[in-house]
Length: 224
Ligand code: DC
Image (cartoon, rainbow, N blue to C red; front, side, top):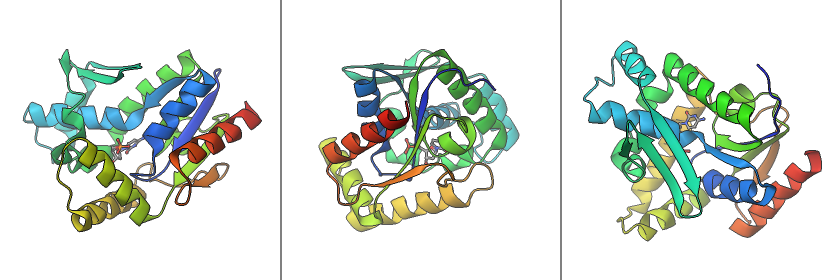
């Protein structure tokens, strides 16, 4: 695999602030931004929308292989399109989030999406965020950051995001869901979430968003 371009890999658990941080880091470095979670979300949405049996791994992988996925980032936000349908809002709904584990454990689906991610990163300097960017997708990334925060802090941040969208939040339930997703990501056989040996841990529990971004940019600039 060629990794001719510069890659900043940002991994970490749900709610650590990867998306917002990675997006801002990309902007400041003038790099492209790649939200790999949006790809797993889009694949899940499409399988649900088309009534594919989520417990049939072979059918799921064959179905995902036909997905025409487009992700555009702009100052106005992110637009995710699957086979021409704008699913930017739908893929963030809790009912989709809850089902992603059915796809993200499927090795064939992971290979398909990893291939798309590598193609993206080979074309332009990229800040990519996800769970396996530094370990699997871009093992030779120029800069690897593992973004973490305590479970309580991550739950609080997710709650704030949801409330901002007008959604009701049951904090205890949300905390349990965030914890469950941590366990699912960390314990799956294929590409489990873990800090790459050469990644720098950036714990944002006691940092503001701005402080987290500044530190990530500083880490990236040190090696770019
Ligand atoms: O970052 P996110 O919450 O949008 O990610 C959605 C799900 O996709 C998450 O539960 C784990 C999965 N995912 C993955 O398995 N590998 C990635 N590189 C990114 C996300």
